[in-house]
Length: 244
Ligand code: PGA
Image (cartoon, protein in one colour):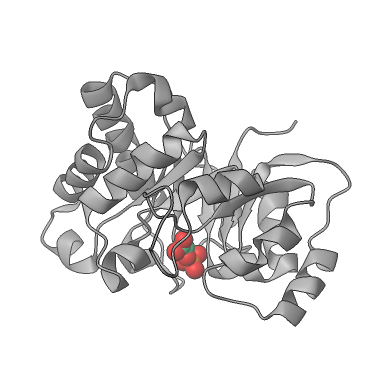
């Protein structure tokens, strides 16, 4: 039986144009796969739009148009037919100093254009060491989703991505993930009154650990970074998460 899990590939700033044409040949489905979302570098998005899966953008700027050199607006992304947007990835928060307030503006703006938002939250190693995980996640959720009305929550997907588990083959235990996902769902219910929020897990998901991660009962899917730029590896992950 097919599951209803969502698998999102965050290709980050990887692949050259020649790699993309090879990837498109290898990453192939016979039928439409609405539970698979690829987020390539923005310049490659047009190549992915006619493929039988969904396409997402890795970042957006909240203003509609104007003199903002190098930025891509929500309305521009919407006009291309992009369905999903990753917002608040820890690399944007850390390297580009995005604040919860910036993230909140992006979310409010993108929701109005009908985007499905993949909001990334997660604690750093230091915060985990100081036992601040719950506090950090709550702060991110409440600030990033401030003033988002309940009717928009069906467009929101939370990706729990512990910063210390990204790109290094380390993951939390299954129990830690399950408990943290439960905590996130509880916050959304308590503060926003929405019961059915989808929570993905992200951080070093690969073809070797996916069978185990896929057993966690309350996880709605996966955000895959490094493993998504290898078509064969990514297809194996999808095979387990989506088709089983
Ligand atoms: P990773 O990245 O799978 O390479 O750990 C995940 C992410 O940053 O979204």
